[in-house]
Amino acid sequence: MNWTFFFARRYLFSRRSHNAINIISGISAVGIAVATLALVCTLSVFNGFQDLVAGLFTAFDPQLRVTLAEGRTIDANDEALLRLEQMPQIEVLTPVLEDQALIVQDGKQTVVTIKGVADNYVRQANLEDLLYGDGTFFLQANGQEYGVLGIQVTSRLGLGATFEEPLQVYAPRRGERVNMANPLSSFNHAELHSPGVVFMVSQAEYDAHYILTSLDFARELFDQEGRVSAMEIRLREGEDVDRAKMEIRKVLGPSFLVHDRYEQQEDVFRIMRVEKLISYLFLTFILLVACFNIIGSLSMLMIDKKADVQTLRSLGADNSDICRIFMYEGRLISLLGAVVGIVLGLLLCWLQQTFGFISMGDQSGSFIVEAYPVSVHFVDILLILATVVAVGWVSVWYPVRHLSRRLLNR
Image (tube, rainbow, N blue to C red; front, side, top):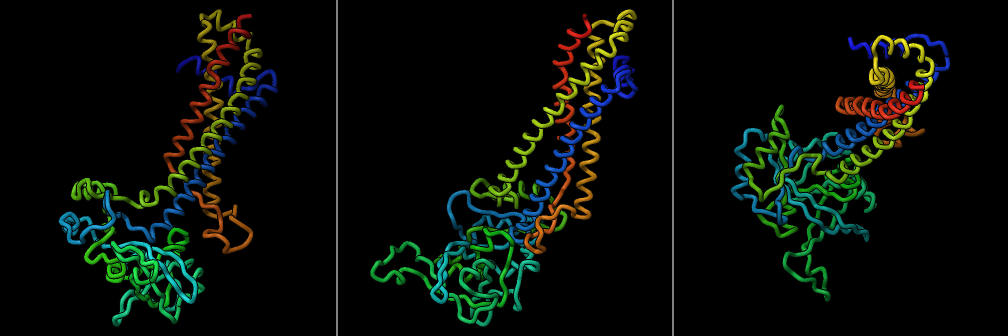
């Protein structure tokens, strides 16, 4: 065993002649432990919110979404898209056509995104937990077209899950300028009936702007016969999403983009990552301040152990060896605080996951979840441990060298 580390360990865990040194060392370790605990809990809460949001989008967003790199629509019989049907990794391939339209109902109007989907869409999306109302999900029946509205769209139009009068849908005709004398003559017009259900994703991007309807309806409304704006993909059970995404990109070539669920909501998750990074940096700065408490403990220890230092010098130890003892002492304090803080942080996260002690609000049902979500990621724990050890070791390096020269060479 390295004898300098042996002495550092003995100094840390043995009783000293001055009890104040023990107290200051304990305060230093506690400060580092509290900062470490805060890092564990804060990053885990950010992970919890990210997983929660990802779970909400998962019900509506496909596993993979194929779009054009340039342009808005493509022929559904394009050779590149047909090659997707031959890929064994794909279980469900759903053609989609999206565009904006104007909805008018009883004097109220709003602009929405019409999402026309093929009949196999029910196998693509997890709709069971999203639908509300007494009806069932269907988009075509008996020659009539039906639309499933986002819940905030129905609210803006003053409707419920079921409405008697069909929605009036208008979309500009392709390549035609608006006739100012008779504007409606420049728009395609169609009607959507109610199947008796609405959907709620708990995300305004969808709930406030989307209407699901049939692909045939969307193609006729937007003058896009035989064309699609995207292909939504559901992979077979057990397929790796990243590997499948790379293979699909190779099959389609550079003219197409393939996005997974996180890339489809890139702006949302980028903001969450930035917030998490800023919180990490702030807490790391607090950790650095806490590490400076170690300096006071080490300076008093150096004074207390002057006699031991003289003995060690008589036995052949030089200044670098003496300095290394107190360097190890400071690093052991930071490591001890890191381990204690991580253990306590993991315990608090487990308690929050299990019992939900910290709630989102006083009123039940006001939020999507009742308690703050927590998700512990192993990578974050490694990052926190590395951060605490690195900050602790760096913060004591120069002060210990400086103090050792001033206090031990007198």
